[in-house]
Length: 116
Image (cartoon, rainbow, N blue to C red; front, side):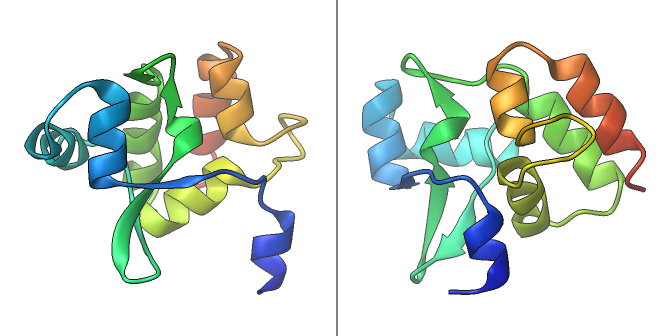
């Protein structure tokens, strides 16, 4: 376990079939969501995994896609974007994913834009 693992908030990591089941979709549809940056995943223990916090009430968190685009524009890889979303951010007062889930997308994206 690295220091980064300790500072990130805890989340369950879901496989593509797990996400498909949670969304009531096919694995192919989940892959398209990943291709479209509506979801973002990371290779954990060999296979691609997606943080469960990126899903809310059987749907993809709607503010995630735009935030991922902002992070990619700032030069973040998928892994770096996930790490940033799951790590408490001092200027926000909590992890960006928690702020997104609370409806604070403008604030999160404003902070993300300063990271470039």
